[in-house]
Image 1 (tube, rainbow, N blue to C red):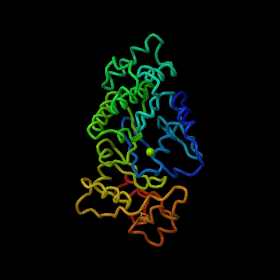
Image 2 (cartoon, rainbow, N blue to C red):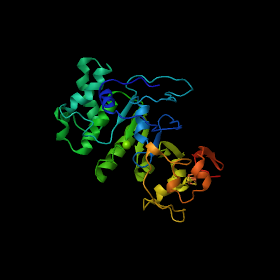
Image 3 (cartoon, rainbow, N blue to C red):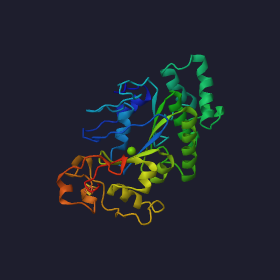
Image 4 (spheres, rainbow, N blue to C red):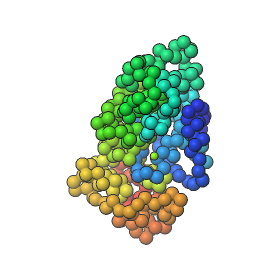
Length: 309
Ligand code: SF4
Ligand code: MG
């Protein structure tokens, strides 16, 4: 139910074409204003597809995206939903100066009179930790971290209330990652932003998220408050992901072998899609798809597994 944003998001959408397949299915979650919801999962699980659907780059064949809550299908005002991508180089036009990149949404959305755009660009550069002198530079004149700051400034230029961050630090050096994460957190508090944060990196997710959805082959198999997920993972896939990160694996927690490759969405396994990799799989798992249900002892946690409860 999102109005398709025009301008650079549209150009990106036009590149993203391919044969149809059901990439995301039966996914349901809500993000309270001012909070961060993280989607985690291995590559190819549908995280980015879901994110792009939320910002209007892809049109869902079924289902709704509601913005603003209260049961109304309200559409966001253009600009109120923005996206930050993994690769801050390919998402910035190399022929444009930083000032032009950041000014585009301001002009396209007519957020400032023409003679006030430059001052707004300076303000945004400062807000993301760059300086007004950087306005004249081209993307290749910046480091990876600085380019991501420009992407963030461009996103903020649309005056969003909801920001989708798709692996925003995955392409950056570890030291720079922390700076960008801290910047995003700082901006969230200052501007009251709501985030959907997509990552395969569980350490990052634990740092930034209030709530986490673990995706496997297009479905959320476990959704829980961040602390609950890390301290008491319930789905075998969540446990497998946690066990594969040495400092996160909880001593004494049931360990899952990080076995097998992610199956393809194109020929998803029958029953529980995770069953070929699950050590606890039973005959039922091969034939019957588990519904996502609240855990009996933790109603805020939702799990799709026959063995839970
Ligand atoms: Fe494993 Fe079965 Fe649970 Fe799927 S439903 S995660 S195969 S135990
Ligand atoms: Mg992705």
